[in-house]
Image 1: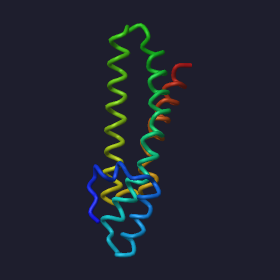
Image 2 (image 1 turned 180 degrees about the vertical axis):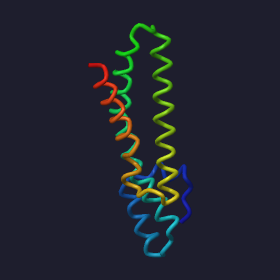
Image 3 (image 1 turned 120 degrees about the horizontal axis):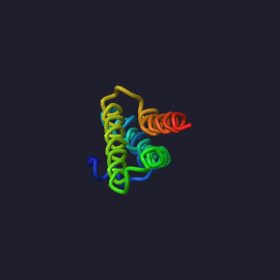
Image 4 (image 1 turned 90 degrees about the vertical axis):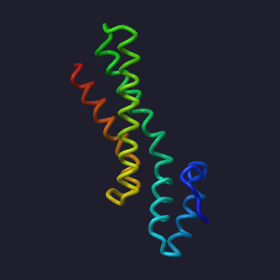
Length: 123
């Protein structure tokens, strides 16, 4: 069964696990990696919410005098950088440069570290 990337997004964690196990039985390493990466990145994307919110709050406090435009611009930059790091981590996992589970949570950990570092600098 050949599932495209857009169809993998609609499968649940359990369905992707079953597909991955079936691909492992047939020794299809590429599909096994695809299913494993997509299965872990289902948790990685929601995990990015808290670090992005913390980064936004810290930067809003730091640049409060910049006005509304600065807040919107910083929000767009944070979301763009978060998505770029997320996409790079997914590419690294699909290329077998990083394991799937750590790669899924790497962007969240990086942005959480950035937020905590910025918060520490505000004190």
